[in-house]
Image: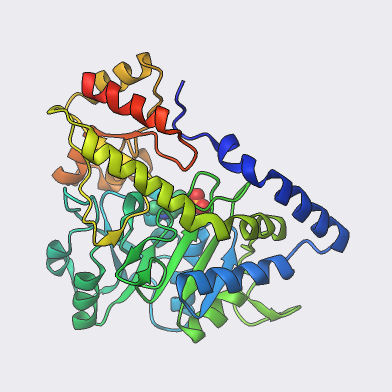
Length: 365
Ligand SMILES: *Cc1c(COP(=O)(O)O)cnc(C)c1O
């Protein structure tokens, strides 16, 4: 059986280091906002190339806190519109809603699955104040075009970088391509903790200062509350685990890219559409997503051949039961994507024999 993602195997090489870290944290007896969190914030900011990193509870809250931070700074107001891709993981949209902002959907580009910059301008109204591009599946969105539009209309740009740790556009990393970015370290992400964790990166000193307070009850100084904050702190122990794994992220992303290159050159089947990857950007292949017209048949065929696959994602956000107001909206490209996509195994611990096998089976379909 080729698992879709073997988290046991992914974390196995770090077990001894994890045990050591756990002992260190126990010995110190300091469990919230300690040295491990500070060290991770320093190192992850350096890795992304940003001035600041703020560790928070998870990826959703990272995005919510960016919006709330801008509201606190007066750069956003309740009811402002935020442009988001109509095909994204639900968390991008929940973040906008939880900050009392209004998501406005923009269709993606069928080639990249990322927000289509050519469709953005038509959606801009006097209430539009921000764009939230999502670097879906690990490939950075077309940030140059997006930023040019944002500049022209005086909009903030916030990256949802939850699937793109380490991805590069030229020499700049995801997380350092906009005003602020939200990351998730959910265990299955390219940089995954052993539980929930997240972070914000930014070069904006004012925003960083507000978010450092907001994540901790709105307090900079203990028992002095300047803002109405939340409790969303990066856990000390999770930060310790992330400190072990961060130095290995580039190497692991290289392994993902090598598998993706093999899939792209060796999978050859008319019934399967492969993802397009412009080699000038450093895609980190959080997911390798193929498309096919009869997805159920392909998924079943792969399952019978002991290959596990998943669907990212089966239901478009505007068609989710939670959002009945949007059920009559129509986003044909998004809907087509949700009907046809299938994610095949890709991870730094896949063996070349496993990759061979996946290719062979797909070519036989
Ligand atoms: C995983 C993910 C999130 C949310 O992260 P959590 O840590 O699970 O809250 C947000 N956006 C995208 C695109 C994601 O893939």
